[in-house]
Amino acid sequence: MKIAVVGASGNAGSRIVTELAGRGHAVTAIARHPEKIVPQPNVVAKRGDAMDQGSLAQLLAGHDVAISSIHFLDSDPAKLIGAVRDSKVGRYLVVGGAGSLEVAPGVALVTIPDFPVAYKAEAEKGGAFLDLLRQQKELNWTFLSPSALFIAGQRTGKFRLGIDQLLTAADGKSWISFEDFAVALADEIEHPAHIRQRFTVGY
Image (tube, rainbow, N blue to C red):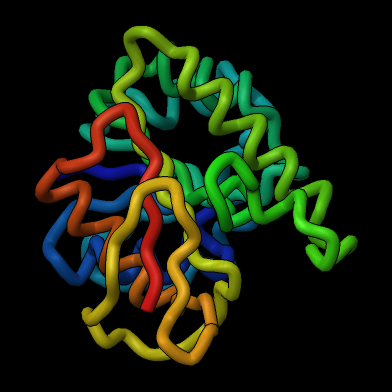
């Protein structure tokens, strides 16, 4: 497939680019600073601005799939969705956040008393992005939330999937590596199972 990754130089985006390219997909890696994108087979780096809906739509046009891997506070969900819609891309996947996942029925992680203040604004905007996606009647979207701790690690290919509830391991830890998140996202692209739906991945 021809796949565009917006935010391709970031922690999650760079791993997603590598995972998809390694599977033989033709990847367009889009970033404000494309020189930061590591050269590798099947990858073409291009300069792009997620806040410029018109030019982003032009960059996305002709791809089978578009992925956005951008901090929510550094982007405008309406412009990203608009660019995808204008580009006529067949499928849109979003690297989501954990804040909107439930820790109890109807209780989002971001609302619990000990949720880190430093991450609250980002988490709340991620939840707003998900709400906006759910209002789209024609867009073929998927929102993949990581677990609470989203960090560099190993590509094991061994993880669990969930839907709207935060996944927690037997030791009480809720986490996923960037590398295994990329595996779960690539699997979803190749074998669609969560169309117009949020899902989550964790150990």
